[in-house]
Length: 212
Image (tube, rainbow, N blue to C red; front, side):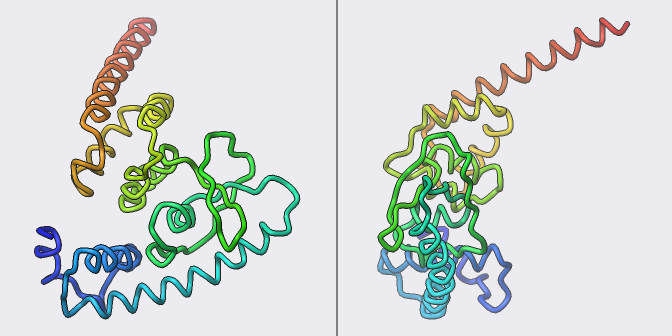
């Protein structure tokens, strides 16, 4: 509520960036859930309805394709994964494109789309992917999912670069609230990040001495 009170006076629905418009449906949902009444809310709900309609066109095509496939269904990534599995309804995250991938071998989350089984990356992998893209709202939605496995997230971060992930995870906690990311996870990645930086510095120093 404090954040909304600060943002509302500066919110101009007629001059939004594409990214700003994409998160409005979820913001409208949160405000309605909290019982907030504001003059901008009807317009935001209208954008939410438009998002639902636009998403349904894309998701209908996807579910039709999946219905007739005989192979294991692909894993759906990106905005579509968030809309299908990580927000309460598909009206809350605008999908601009479908990102299917058949070669994904990591853990997944199964859900249903128009009666057809759809797979998306497990919360830990989706959170990581969204952080790498700077899609903070998507990352927060996945991080708050009941099936979130923070041990798996830390293992993924360790394999792909803890220094980069630690910084973005800290930023996610600042944007979405400290309760989004467990303090123990932030500390663990911060320690591993520091260790990785030190190891890199030592290797660089040894290579420099070898050249001399």
